[in-house]
Image (cartoon, rainbow, N blue to C red; front, side):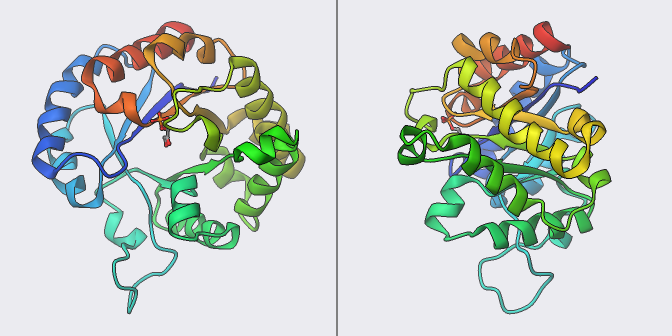
Amino acid sequence: MRRPVIAGNWKMNKTASEAVAFVQELAPRLAPYTSVDSIVCPPFIAIESTAAALRGTSLKVGAQNVSAQEKGAYTSQVSGGMLAGLVDYVIIGHSECREYLGETDAVINAKIKAALAHGLTPIFACGENLAVYEAGETNAFVSAQVRAGLDGIDGEAVSRMIIAYEPIWAIGTGKAATAEIAENICGGAVRATVAELYGQAVADDVRVQYGGSVKPSNMREYMSCPNVDGALVGGASLIVDDFTALVAAAAEAKG
Ligand code: 13P
Protein backbone atom coordinates (compact mmCIF):
# COMPACT_ATOMS: atom_id res chain seq x y z
CA MET A 1 0.00 0.00 0.00
CA ARG A 2 1.54 3.33 -1.06
CA ARG A 3 1.28 6.23 1.39
CA PRO A 4 -0.20 9.34 -0.18
CA VAL A 5 2.32 12.18 -0.45
CA ILE A 6 1.64 15.89 -0.88
CA ALA A 7 4.57 18.20 -1.54
CA GLY A 8 4.41 21.99 -1.65
CA ASN A 9 6.87 23.54 -4.09
CA TRP A 10 7.08 27.13 -2.95
CA LYS A 11 9.32 28.15 -5.88
CA MET A 12 10.74 31.67 -5.29
CA ASN A 13 8.21 32.63 -2.63
CA LYS A 14 8.47 33.40 1.10
CA THR A 15 11.41 34.85 3.03
CA ALA A 16 12.95 32.79 5.82
CA SER A 17 10.81 34.49 8.46
CA GLU A 18 7.65 34.17 6.37
CA ALA A 19 8.42 30.47 5.87
CA VAL A 20 8.78 29.89 9.61
CA ALA A 21 5.55 31.73 10.42
CA PHE A 22 3.75 29.73 7.73
CA VAL A 23 4.85 26.28 8.89
CA GLN A 24 4.18 27.14 12.52
CA GLU A 25 0.58 27.64 11.49
CA LEU A 26 0.47 24.74 9.03
CA ALA A 27 2.12 21.93 11.01
CA PRO A 28 -0.54 21.73 13.77
CA ARG A 29 -3.29 21.80 11.14
CA LEU A 30 -1.74 18.79 9.39
CA ALA A 31 -1.03 16.82 12.57
CA PRO A 32 -4.30 14.81 12.45
CA TYR A 33 -3.52 13.45 8.98
CA THR A 34 -1.00 10.83 10.00
CA SER A 35 -1.68 8.61 6.99
CA VAL A 36 -0.30 11.23 4.56
CA ASP A 37 3.32 12.30 4.01
CA SER A 38 3.36 16.11 3.82
CA ILE A 39 6.36 18.08 2.62
CA VAL A 40 7.18 21.77 2.16
CA CYS A 41 9.98 22.81 -0.20
CA PRO A 42 11.08 26.35 0.66
CA PRO A 43 13.81 28.35 -1.11
CA PHE A 44 17.33 27.35 0.00
CA ILE A 45 17.70 30.42 2.23
CA ALA A 46 14.69 29.36 4.31
CA ILE A 47 15.49 25.65 4.63
CA GLU A 48 17.47 25.76 7.84
CA SER A 49 15.00 27.89 9.81
CA THR A 50 12.03 25.97 8.42
CA ALA A 51 13.60 22.63 9.33
CA ALA A 52 14.36 23.91 12.84
CA ALA A 53 10.78 25.13 13.27
CA LEU A 54 9.43 21.73 12.17
CA ARG A 55 11.66 19.52 14.27
CA GLY A 56 9.47 17.05 16.15
CA THR A 57 6.51 17.51 13.79
CA SER A 58 5.45 15.20 11.00
CA LEU A 59 5.70 17.91 8.31
CA LYS A 60 8.89 17.26 6.36
CA VAL A 61 11.16 19.60 4.44
CA GLY A 62 12.46 19.29 0.88
CA ALA A 63 14.80 21.36 -1.28
CA GLN A 64 13.88 22.60 -4.75
CA ASN A 65 17.12 21.49 -6.40
CA VAL A 66 20.55 20.01 -5.71
CA SER A 67 23.87 20.12 -7.50
CA ALA A 68 25.14 17.01 -9.23
CA GLN A 69 28.60 17.96 -7.91
CA GLU A 70 30.00 17.22 -4.49
CA LYS A 71 31.85 20.52 -3.88
CA GLY A 72 34.18 23.04 -5.49
CA ALA A 73 34.04 25.89 -7.97
CA TYR A 74 30.32 25.81 -8.79
CA THR A 75 29.16 29.31 -7.92
CA SER A 76 25.56 29.47 -6.63
CA GLN A 77 25.13 25.72 -6.30
CA VAL A 78 24.19 23.64 -3.23
CA SER A 79 25.33 20.03 -2.83
CA GLY A 80 23.59 16.96 -1.47
CA GLY A 81 26.07 16.86 1.39
CA MET A 82 25.02 20.38 2.41
CA LEU A 83 21.35 19.40 2.35
CA ALA A 84 21.71 16.08 4.16
CA GLY A 85 20.49 16.38 7.72
CA LEU A 86 18.38 19.44 6.87
CA VAL A 87 15.94 18.00 4.34
CA ASP A 88 14.55 14.56 3.54
CA TYR A 89 13.43 15.27 -0.02
CA VAL A 90 14.63 17.18 -3.06
CA ILE A 91 12.77 18.16 -6.21
CA ILE A 92 14.85 17.33 -9.29
CA GLY A 93 13.99 17.99 -12.92
CA HIS A 94 11.28 20.59 -12.43
CA SER A 95 10.30 22.02 -15.81
CA GLU A 96 11.25 25.52 -14.64
CA CYS A 97 14.80 24.29 -13.93
CA ARG A 98 14.86 22.47 -17.26
CA GLU A 99 13.78 25.66 -19.02
CA TYR A 100 15.46 28.52 -17.12
CA LEU A 101 18.58 26.71 -15.90
CA GLY A 102 19.05 24.55 -18.99
CA GLU A 103 18.96 21.28 -17.08
CA THR A 104 19.11 18.33 -19.47
CA ASP A 105 17.99 14.75 -18.87
CA ALA A 106 21.65 13.82 -18.28
CA VAL A 107 22.11 16.54 -15.65
CA ILE A 108 18.88 15.48 -13.97
CA ASN A 109 20.03 11.87 -13.91
CA ALA A 110 23.32 12.94 -12.26
CA LYS A 111 21.40 15.01 -9.71
CA ILE A 112 19.14 12.08 -8.81
CA LYS A 113 22.25 9.97 -8.21
CA ALA A 114 23.81 12.72 -6.06
CA ALA A 115 20.63 13.01 -3.98
CA LEU A 116 20.42 9.25 -3.44
CA ALA A 117 24.09 9.12 -2.46
CA HIS A 118 23.27 11.47 0.41
CA GLY A 119 20.16 9.61 1.54
CA LEU A 120 17.75 12.20 0.14
CA THR A 121 14.53 11.11 -1.54
CA PRO A 122 14.24 12.61 -5.02
CA ILE A 123 10.93 14.01 -6.20
CA PHE A 124 11.74 13.52 -9.86
CA ALA A 125 9.62 15.79 -12.05
CA CYS A 126 8.75 15.15 -15.66
CA GLY A 127 6.12 16.42 -18.08
CA GLU A 128 5.51 17.66 -21.60
CA ASN A 129 4.86 21.09 -23.07
CA LEU A 130 1.73 22.08 -24.96
CA ALA A 131 3.16 21.27 -28.41
CA VAL A 132 3.99 17.70 -27.37
CA TYR A 133 0.58 17.34 -25.76
CA GLU A 134 -1.24 18.63 -28.82
CA ALA A 135 0.78 16.33 -31.06
CA GLY A 136 -0.47 13.38 -29.00
CA GLU A 137 3.08 12.42 -28.02
CA THR A 138 2.81 12.80 -24.25
CA ASN A 139 3.09 9.14 -23.38
CA ALA A 140 6.27 8.55 -25.39
CA PHE A 141 7.81 11.87 -24.27
CA VAL A 142 7.23 11.29 -20.55
CA SER A 143 8.33 7.68 -20.81
CA ALA A 144 11.62 8.83 -22.41
CA GLN A 145 12.16 11.39 -19.65
CA VAL A 146 11.61 8.71 -17.00
CA ARG A 147 14.03 6.31 -18.71
CA ALA A 148 16.71 8.99 -19.02
CA GLY A 149 16.28 10.25 -15.47
CA LEU A 150 16.53 6.77 -13.98
CA ASP A 151 19.43 5.56 -16.12
CA GLY A 152 21.86 3.52 -14.02
CA ILE A 153 19.77 3.72 -10.84
CA ASP A 154 18.91 0.45 -9.16
CA GLY A 155 15.38 -0.75 -8.53
CA GLU A 156 15.63 -0.65 -4.76
CA ALA A 157 16.36 3.10 -4.89
CA VAL A 158 13.63 3.68 -7.47
CA SER A 159 11.06 1.92 -5.29
CA ARG A 160 11.63 4.57 -2.59
CA MET A 161 11.51 7.55 -4.97
CA ILE A 162 8.68 9.88 -5.88
CA ILE A 163 8.06 10.71 -9.53
CA ALA A 164 5.91 13.76 -10.29
CA TYR A 165 4.10 14.09 -13.60
CA GLU A 166 3.62 17.80 -14.25
CA PRO A 167 2.39 18.82 -17.69
CA ILE A 168 3.97 22.22 -18.35
CA TRP A 169 0.75 23.54 -19.87
CA ALA A 170 -1.02 22.95 -16.54
CA ILE A 171 1.57 24.63 -14.27
CA GLY A 172 0.39 27.93 -12.86
CA THR A 173 -2.18 28.30 -15.63
CA GLY A 174 -5.34 27.19 -13.83
CA LYS A 175 -5.76 24.73 -16.73
CA ALA A 176 -5.36 21.56 -14.71
CA ALA A 177 -5.14 18.26 -16.55
CA THR A 178 -8.27 16.19 -16.26
CA ALA A 179 -8.15 13.30 -13.82
CA GLU A 180 -8.31 11.01 -16.84
CA ILE A 181 -5.13 12.50 -18.32
CA ALA A 182 -3.39 12.40 -14.93
CA GLU A 183 -4.30 8.73 -14.48
CA ASN A 184 -3.34 7.80 -18.04
CA ILE A 185 0.11 9.35 -17.80
CA CYS A 186 0.89 8.58 -14.14
CA GLY A 187 -0.14 4.98 -14.77
CA GLY A 188 0.33 4.38 -18.49
CA ALA A 189 3.59 6.29 -18.92
CA VAL A 190 5.36 6.79 -15.56
CA ARG A 191 4.47 3.62 -13.66
CA ALA A 192 4.38 1.50 -16.82
CA THR A 193 7.90 2.62 -17.70
CA VAL A 194 9.15 1.82 -14.20
CA ALA A 195 7.52 -1.62 -14.56
CA GLU A 196 9.26 -2.19 -17.89
CA LEU A 197 12.62 -1.17 -16.46
CA TYR A 198 12.46 -2.75 -13.00
CA GLY A 199 9.50 -5.11 -12.84
CA GLN A 200 6.05 -4.87 -11.29
CA ALA A 201 7.12 -4.93 -7.63
CA VAL A 202 9.18 -1.74 -7.99
CA ALA A 203 6.41 -0.14 -10.07
CA ASP A 204 3.93 -0.99 -7.32
CA ASP A 205 6.11 0.73 -4.72
CA VAL A 206 7.18 3.92 -6.49
CA ARG A 207 4.94 6.85 -5.65
CA VAL A 208 3.65 8.97 -8.52
CA GLN A 209 2.28 12.46 -8.06
CA TYR A 210 0.32 14.68 -10.38
CA GLY A 211 1.20 18.39 -10.47
CA GLY A 212 -0.21 21.41 -12.29
CA SER A 213 -2.93 23.73 -10.94
CA VAL A 214 -3.88 21.33 -8.14
CA LYS A 215 -6.41 23.01 -5.85
CA PRO A 216 -8.72 21.88 -3.05
CA SER A 217 -11.54 21.92 -5.64
CA ASN A 218 -9.93 19.30 -7.94
CA MET A 219 -7.84 17.29 -5.49
CA ARG A 220 -10.52 14.65 -4.83
CA GLU A 221 -10.66 13.74 -8.53
CA TYR A 222 -6.92 13.16 -8.69
CA MET A 223 -6.91 11.15 -5.50
CA SER A 224 -9.62 8.89 -6.88
CA CYS A 225 -7.18 7.78 -9.62
CA PRO A 226 -5.56 4.43 -8.79
CA ASN A 227 -2.15 5.51 -10.12
CA VAL A 228 -2.03 8.98 -8.54
CA ASP A 229 -0.51 8.81 -5.06
CA GLY A 230 -0.53 12.51 -4.32
CA ALA A 231 0.33 15.92 -5.69
CA LEU A 232 3.21 18.31 -6.25
CA VAL A 233 1.64 21.69 -5.63
CA GLY A 234 2.76 25.24 -6.36
CA GLY A 235 0.31 28.09 -5.76
CA ALA A 236 -2.11 26.30 -3.42
CA SER A 237 0.78 25.19 -1.18
CA LEU A 238 1.39 28.84 -0.25
CA ILE A 239 -1.97 29.07 1.53
CA VAL A 240 -2.45 27.31 4.87
CA ASP A 241 -6.14 26.55 4.37
CA ASP A 242 -5.55 25.17 0.86
CA PHE A 243 -2.56 23.04 1.84
CA THR A 244 -4.58 21.61 4.73
CA ALA A 245 -7.54 20.86 2.45
CA LEU A 246 -5.28 19.02 -0.01
CA VAL A 247 -3.82 16.84 2.72
CA ALA A 248 -7.29 16.21 4.18
CA ALA A 249 -8.56 15.14 0.75
CA ALA A 250 -5.61 12.76 0.31
CA ALA A 251 -6.21 11.27 3.76
CA GLU A 252 -9.89 10.81 3.03
CA ALA A 253 -9.31 9.15 -0.34
CA LYS A 254 -6.27 7.01 0.36
CA GLY A 255 -5.21 7.36 3.97
P1 13P B 1 0.93 25.16 -9.62
O1 13P B 1 0.30 24.25 -8.59
O2 13P B 1 1.04 26.59 -9.16
O3 13P B 1 0.30 25.00 -10.97
O4 13P B 1 2.46 24.67 -9.78
C1 13P B 1 2.72 23.34 -10.01
C2 13P B 1 4.17 23.10 -9.87
O5 13P B 1 4.97 23.51 -10.70
C3 13P B 1 4.64 22.36 -8.69
O6 13P B 1 5.96 21.95 -8.84
